[in-house]
Length: 264
Length: 286
Image (cartoon, rainbow over all chains, first blue to last red; front, side, top):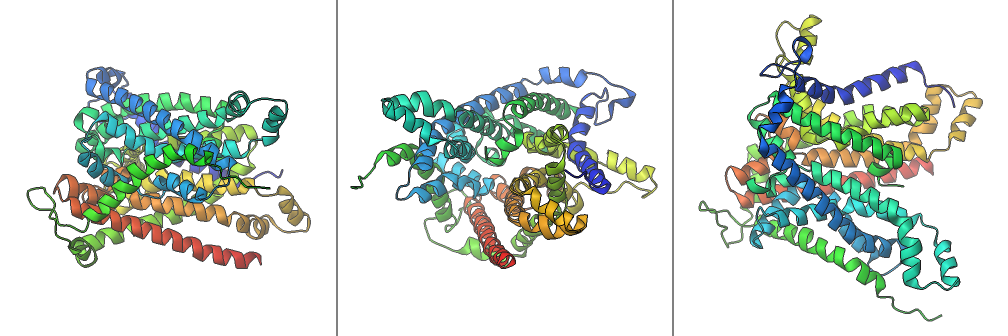
């Protein structure tokens, strides 16, 4: 393979700087010892990390977000698995329509879903409840799970299942012993991307979360619109550290591009 | 062979399909019908049918300006994402696997970080005493801090940062289908590097650029967090206006009408762009 020309490599470095600059700045500000947004070069401390402990509302919001993301990703995966199998392995009337319906949250701007679901949840008496949030998030992230399950199921070699059948295995044995295990990477990948999408979701959640069910992104957003101080930076830094660990695990075992691109 | 009606796929697909129907389609239809009624000052909805909300969207300069601003920002952010995302995807596809893994974490990693956190970073950089202003002052390019927060420049830079990874992903996906031998063939026949890029590589990644553009355009037009934090009240976009109508004025029906208009415009533009470029793209290859 030919080497890349120097201008493209320079561009690549500049692009990386552009992508990282805002994240690095947040991390730096988190270590300041000043009471306002400042760089840590003439005075670093961990005071803003300790300050998080004095704000239990952020810690509560973090747990809300975790529970919401885990719950909705699980529901979403449970709904997407049978559908993914049906769509990938069968040709049936209405297949395209069902697929379109299931991927539709990707076509609708989140702000539109936010207002529609806020109204809907109010009408059925679920305003601001955790149940309402989990339901909303589960449908919002379903396309992400479905895409990864679909690509795992489409790339599946059916002759293995046929071999098992011809050797006398029952349909259920074939499914549970052969097909399901081979779909696991797709299901796990889908669950992870759904979890992250739900955890980070702001636009729709800002409409439907109540003060008692506020998620961390909504709380951070509300805080930023009032004031920008190093506490935001230290919370963000903790979040980014967790994301980085998760990201390295994904990149090691799964491939970040595969997870985000929806193809395996 | 007798074809038997197989009900199994329907049973398998039913739970998800019915959930989507209940939680996406019905709420959207309800919001759509809400947009044809007036919100009364006491917070209830008038039962009388009216197209007044839509009439104000197309006649009131306040709303027209907001729609125009939203779509101008979306177009500019899409264009910038093509400009920097396409070359970046190309570089990624040509890196050695070690460097590529690191670069992927840098380029795609931010997608896994909350938009609020990424926007916070830009808000810090854009401040009057932020690094960008310090650099501009230090280099003598300006003698006073430049206002970047609440300006188009700031909004567009931050939005491009948030959305360009989608362009890189889409273009990279189509670059991976590309056969490296075609480039080598062109090279061995004496084509220069730029000619190979322009005549061989670029035409083959147009589908990726198109799908990336549609994603970036739609996501920018509907974005909320970044416009709200960086643009603030001075640069209201459709989504921040919807939030305002709902939470400041409790004007449900106007919020629903704005949402419906946004959704329809995004869908129509996406479909039209898709068809137009598909047709053009066909001619290139026939």
